[in-house]
Image (cartoon, rainbow, N blue to C red; front, side, top):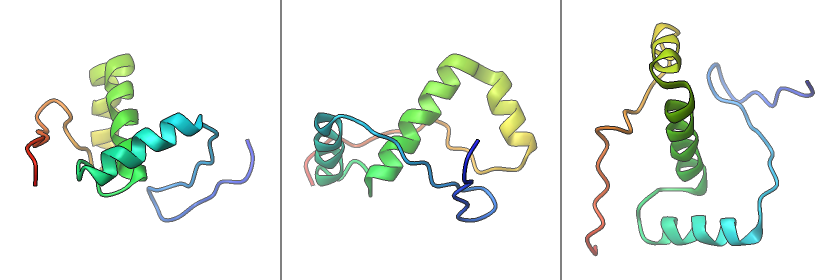
Length: 82
């Protein structure tokens, strides 16, 4: 499956190709202060996808492996101007 791109015990580097418009939109979210980085915005999107598609089964397995989990159901985003 290729080179593992390991950062630490729980983090991996994954190289992807996405349309420039997606990158621009991610940069807008970061500029608005909604996320500290593109990476964090992408991580949240992936967490939401995994919860939607795999539900509690994925969450339980992840919790058992002692990884840090962010609850997207209870996480609030303040959209008010800074």
